[in-house]
Image 1 (tube, one colour):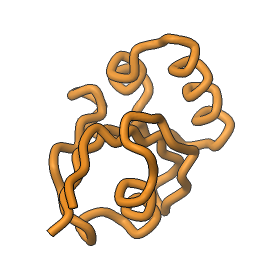
Image 2 (image 1 turned 30 degrees about the horizontal axis):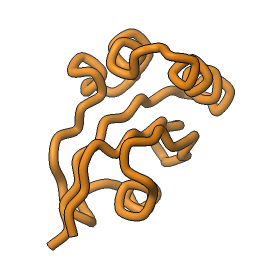
Image 3 (image 1 turned 90 degrees about the horizontal axis):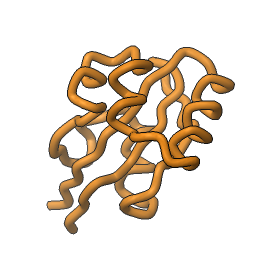
Image 4 (image 1 turned 45 degrees about the vertical axis):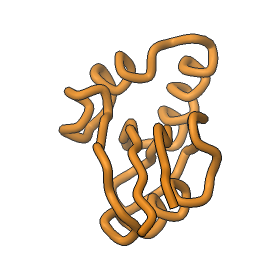
Length: 93
């Protein structure tokens, strides 16, 4: 069964999400941005969500984690929780 590890940053607005993505692409540290901006408790761990299987996260999140390129920052991804930046750190089939 497929498994993946990812970290994310959750914010309330798409604009804020895009701004943070620009900072990360400009060299800012993902974990530091997560720690200071993410509204998810995982922000305290640099946004790390650990390892999970398909179906354990909301559908929009799963679609990105199990199909997009590993090691890149993807987003904004809108869910019922808000807007996410997602970095897939590892994936196995």
